[in-house]
Each structure stands twice: as structure tokens, then as C-alpha cells.
Amino acid sequence: QANALENKVTNCEFQVGRAEDTIPRVCAAHLASGQIEGQDDLQDGEGGCLGARVVERFGSCVAVLDPPREGVHWKVIKALRASKEIERIVYISCNHTAWVDQARALCCPTDESRTPGEPFRPIKAHGVDLFPHTSHVELVVLFERGECLKRTLAARTDKHAEKVPIRCKEGAV
Image (tube, rainbow, N blue to C red):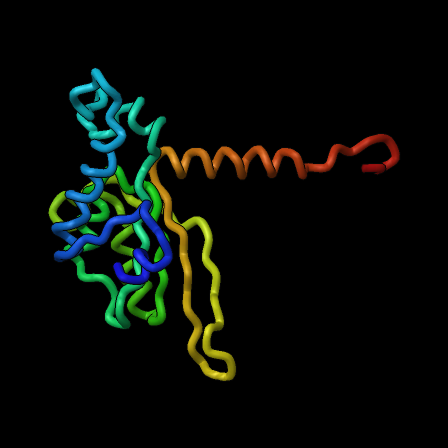
């Protein structure tokens, strides 16, 4: 917080608490702060909590995970999966073995007891060499679901369609 004050950063908040308890509260506050006058609830027609006008104004939430070597506790994974507001996760891992189990839990089919909510899908992964001349590499992975995933897949389809060569007479492109 001191660093934020020193650098005059005013568009952030600091939360204290267990991640699995804080995630739902922060997501609800994020969307509630985007409520438009005259819109009393955040329910969509399907029982979700993403009012279309609120999402239009603020968008969905992005979670950034940078856990210790052991990885993220399963209760945090459960809270992330259960929070419909979170459509993107940027996961930074220094332990690729622990990351595999975490990725499975984020991406596996819905199981209301352990992995509620819509599963995520890995979109991009990059290795970042922060420690040259060592075997340590940080893994940064983007996961998406919901509308974010639909937009990403649509953009990829459009981009791919633009790159498909059109064959003319005599094999010219």
C-alpha cells in the first residue's frame, strides 16, 4: 500500500483475508460498483450475477495467480470456478509439476462438489526466463471461459479465415 501511495496509484484496492473467502466478495463489489442507477439487482435472465448493462460498463473480472511452489489450495480453485464474474485467469507458476494439477482442476468438467461452475480453457502459455543460466523458468498461462473465450475463439476463426490462401488459375496465390 505504501508503494501505491508513493506512486499516486489510486485505482486499486488491497484486500486482506483468505483468497477463497475474498474472491466472491471482491467480484460482487466489482460488479456492484458498476451498477447503473435504476438497476437494483445484478441478476441476468438465467440466474447468473452478470447484469448485461453492468458488464457492458465494467466487463468481467480477471484473476492473477502467482502462488508459492506448492500451488494454489483446492479451495481457491473451487472459489475461482464458482465465481461467474471471473472469465480470465493469468496463472504464473514456478513449479510446472504443481501447475499441471492446478490446470486440470481449472479445466476439468463441472463437478458441483469440487469444481463448480464453467471450466476454463488454456489460451496462451509462455515460458519466461527470469533466472538465466539456471533450470528455472516461470510459466505464464492465460485461461479463459464464458464470453471472453467466445470472443477469443471468434477472433481466431476470423484471423484464420483471413490467412487462408485463395487459389487462382495456374496455382497462383
